[in-house]
Length: 314
Ligand code: UDP
Image 1 (cartoon, rainbow, N blue to C red):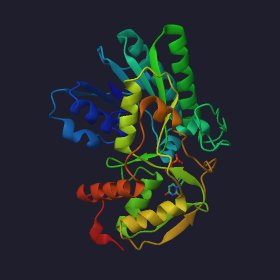
Image 2 (image 1 turned 45 degrees about the vertical axis):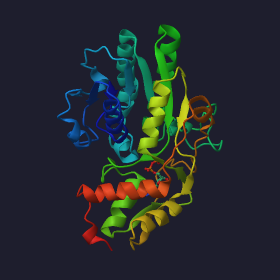
Image 3 (image 1 turned 90 degrees about the vertical axis):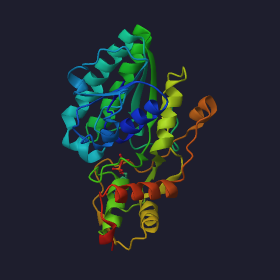
Image 4 (image 1 turned 120 degrees about the horizontal axis):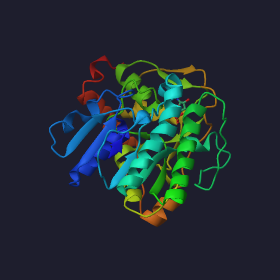
């Protein structure tokens, strides 16, 4: 069972599990996705879609061997628009998913986030770093929901012997990213392909480390198939400033869009880069797709889907 099945990661995870012969139940309330990422799975007899808000309960009979709990708004504009819903899915939603995993005797994997590190004072971020989160700032609705979800997952493991794992997912992109997602890769690619200005928040000196979706899904499955409790960082350590990313996007899309600066969102982390030593040594996992190639694939996907018209390129 995959919660958040219609999202970028969820949809690729479902597709990968199906390609390996599994039967998959995907759950999503479609609050931050429209279901188009799952359209190609409609005719697959081994795939079932359940539209439900996991915060209020998960109407899946089961049992399942794996519960991958990905459900949550993940883009800053989405979780800032849905603050209470985000806190509820991280808390009550995770509670329901854990209870099912316990009942079914399933392996449970929580999709946590690099946001648990907040604006990190330790660089690159190791799993042992406890983070630097503003507990009452606007981003706390996401950061603290995920931190609570981690605490709940750890307690379930201790108190109920549920077979749990936590993965901390760093910025991920790829085909399936909504053009209106609001995160940097989506915004930059859409703007570049349309010949519109790329919006750089703040100076653009802040950094992120971007992982291609197939690599991330391989990491989630490696953790799911291991006995590691985590947390395990999953991400691509290739770190870029936002300005460097804007240059790369312009180059990959052969766009001459201008860049323009906008105010930096409150509590926007200054730098972010995963230390993936744990995943590499314990699981033999490492990302394979270079950022330039991944951005090219994502741009081509957007064009092929008719999501942006390259004819309007500047
Ligand atoms: N950002 C930007 N322009 C955009 C969207 C985002 O400069 O159009 C910046 C944002 O301020 C942040 C970084 O890009 O520093 C990554 O933002 P995103 O929303 O993708 O994810 P985050 O890592 O902040 O959750």
